[in-house]
Length: 435
Image (tube, rainbow, N blue to C red; front, side, top):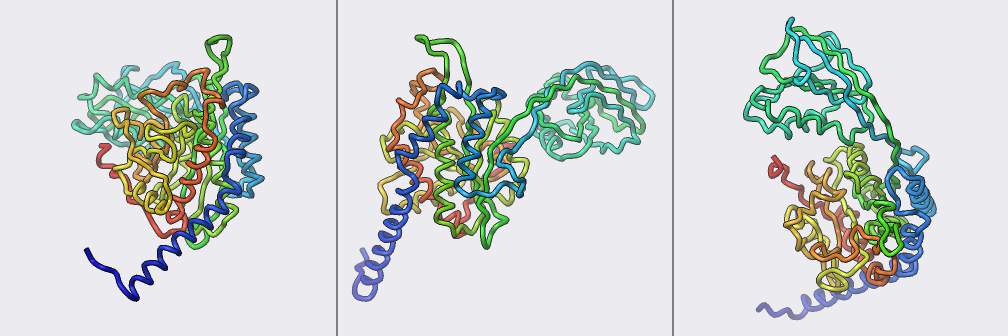
């Protein structure tokens, strides 16, 4: 063992004192903003019977969105792209198929060999319509390739090799959870690239409005690099009564995560000095397919998103007890190691996800950006092998530990500081593993 003496011993002691002093100063500032009383204030409203479980598309979820937006305003956040509103409005489109007909090089095409993914009620398309032609060839991964084309933001006519005939109809799955877009993609089951063609495709279109809540704290020297803190504010609403109670309040799932995002916004605004831009987002529609986070993610170049801290169900203690939480996909980047390094001198520990058999990394709102390579992880304490109140009427504020929850939020704040300052940049998710 190397013995430290003289000058080096003084430097070592000084470094230790500096670390301790820094942590003390952070703690002093953080306790004024992130504390059990504030946690309880926000939780009481977000999980109240008044909001009737914050179901997607309900009037009550709009009340929740208004509350979050008001808290962002009080914190002094900016709106995204100076839009003037913290509400990021968008529409989910549900196209109901009516009919399809097509002719390629003079030959009529069976309706079952045509699938249009569109938000337009009627498409009349021919070789002069400006659609690009693309192909999914034999041996390709059908759905991976189709997903890639769907993200291109182009009008496309895609020939799908006839070797995929048995799976072709499953491409209609891309019609679920669509957002309004001017682009359409037409899949045709054929091995040939047509010289001339015409298609007429009709759908009945139903639009349903949604809104995320987004606030921004612009960075200084690295303002075009983004760090995201997020959680979903929707839950499952009103359901079958249990002992006379039919409101699924969702105190832990995920009023807890939403509360954390609001408190982190207030904290980072108060201390300032963030070199990277911080985005605070409360997502809608997680419970019905993660559509809020999917829409949100499309507004960013994933290469510019440095890290995403998604927070879900932190209101109860973890399997290791208090002062601990786990990070999904811990092994996929070094973000967890950076976070833990920033917590030196504290008694808080971030653990790798102990429930890997449940594939949690790709089941929450971090998933869309993670699939694009972003170090986007979910932080949770939920005991997924034995969570007594998960999706039950009993998920109420009385089941939460406010003090421990405040400690978790503080740990997230302190553990992220070197990423926000620009000192550390987490490694990316290897997207080759997804192909």
